[in-house]
Length: 477
Image 1 (cartoon, helix red, strand yellow):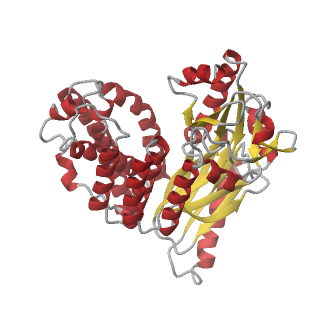
Image 2 (image 1 turned 90 degrees about the horizontal axis):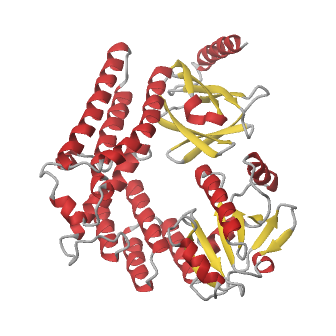
Image 3 (image 1 turned 45 degrees about the vertical axis):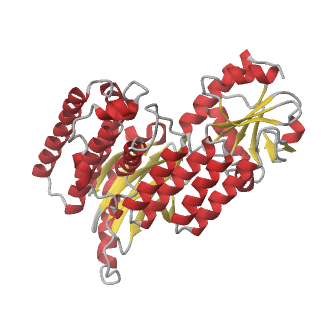
């Protein structure tokens, strides 16, 4: 039956190409496939973070979509799995007719492509899966001395290049594929070098940097920090962040009086923002980096004067008015969530579909945590952690809020599917407004609130080493 379906679909695509040949003067491609164990009856196709279309699955959980006036490049398809929102990329070029098949229970591992344009995409997904395994080895290698570390990552890179050359000799490849495949190898290699000072054991990062060979970062002079064609590609994105972390560290040590590095130091963070502003000219890449580091600093820092310094720099350098307004709102919300202030009135929906509010359920020492179906690992780990803490600290109430803009049924199914208790589980009545009011970023954020509904810590993290000490302090207040 599946063979018959694939043949039929290829015929339909060929007929579609022929039928539309006189109408469609631009380039086009087809993307279709079958989703096993779907949660929803649709998938979302996007490019450069902009949604192109929402494609309905048919009665057999299959779909087909024609992309007209195609601009070749990396496209994303997004859909929910039992573990949250998942996405993967596919390289589409003119006249491609690609079929994908995946099981949401094993999303990346089950993904396979067939049809014209499939081989290049199967190569890319295979390399993606290999890197997930390789990443653990890299962190172990980082404890080696620089020379031995260099040998290990050079060997990994050489093996990947040989495999790519073998693939190119066997199949006809396009310039765009060649660029993406080589970029995947190069920027993974560069990322591995950039993280070395941070992952290598020892708190004296200055000493680690000084021990590196002089040519260790020579590749930077040839790197394109403004490659718009790769701006949403995972490996390039990771490299950019790690590179600016590292370059800012070197810059920071030129005018600091200590060898011990603190990532929350306002001087270091200003150095990093200044480097981004001076090196990046692509407005989208610059805005993403400036916004990310600004909001990350605001979430971790407790000094208002330093907050203003970072916000002033960002608003002066950013050209994104929406981004600037968001940062100002976020900073204002953080200011309203200071220690000793009353926790904001937020409307909730419980698992019985009854409306309530935070102030109606806080009558004892309380921890308020959040989760989203978009972040399955955090969802699963936080629920397990809260269950463990509940047993150890029965005096503390743990309120768990889903922040998604989904219906109650979706939330309950996610909890039951993973065999988590429905007790003290809620979702926001008004997700967007509530997320703004509580400045929920990152997802690991938690509030510690006393029995009088006063905030004890608005930037807690249940996975921090000293979190249980904070709970004991809360109980003994």
